[in-house]
Image 1 (cartoon, rainbow, N blue to C red):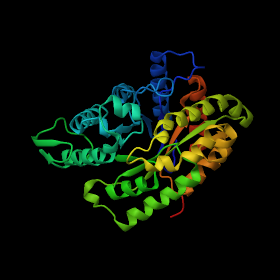
Image 2 (image 1 turned 90 degrees about the vertical axis):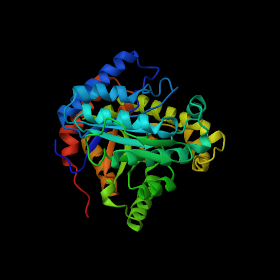
Image 3 (image 1 turned 180 degrees about the horizontal axis):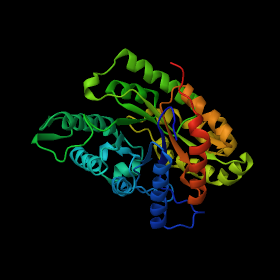
Image 4 (image 1 turned 180 degrees about the vertical axis):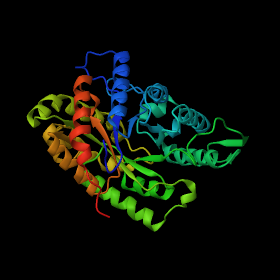
Length: 364
């Protein structure tokens, strides 16, 4: 498969109530899907980190899962997205990231962010109002680790003195860095930090399109030094299901896609019910969120550009439109991660053979 840009996969490791698998089967079948993706020529696969979200996400130890994937694949890039930096010590993040990069032969993509779950913050003992400051300070420490043999740091949250952190990552100057971006301001912050922006499935496409333009404008205004390994790129997650028969595509995927997006909205509800410092943008989205929660159905999701369901030609047109409007990396949540593995594998093959090779680079 030859494509004009990297095409990746995206997983939450979901177990919906209509799925009769246990967790061990879920993990094993997902790893087998990654092996197939590697054979088909997909560029990478990403897995999230969430805690205390049964059904929606069983990926609470993604670095362990990625280690298993590293041993079973050869070319597939391994996306760690996102690591919620506020409830991890940056030294341990550096050690685990470098270890994974070494055992995978330099295939790690590192996504970071603040996270959005009040329950996670409460459980791990971190004040939610410190989310942004902890994230930016942790990133500063990680970059010091990438650039210097010894790390010295004295900040608001961490004091480090003359640390030699091992092992060192294989990729130089470091694995690609991506920041989760939801609010328009977060896209500008990602550009200021010189990292790629990861747009999740939270918002309609017309809003993400404007966010991409803000990111590009912010980068052009203050381009970071290339010596720091900066990358100007926007990746976007989109739910997708492709079948030769467009009616079958809708029939097979409707329940899974509507379940996934309904749960996604439910997971963000707690942060909308209270005004947490640093998360004001979520409150601004509350009216639309309340309306959307009562109308989560496939047709609306398609109209908002949040999912793509249909035959190969339809899927090609919709993906091409995203490329043409500024998406550099597509993260495909095939079947929204909530369909039987056999159906996911069929869609992976169909996309690889009949859709992705026909995509074209956007005009300069």
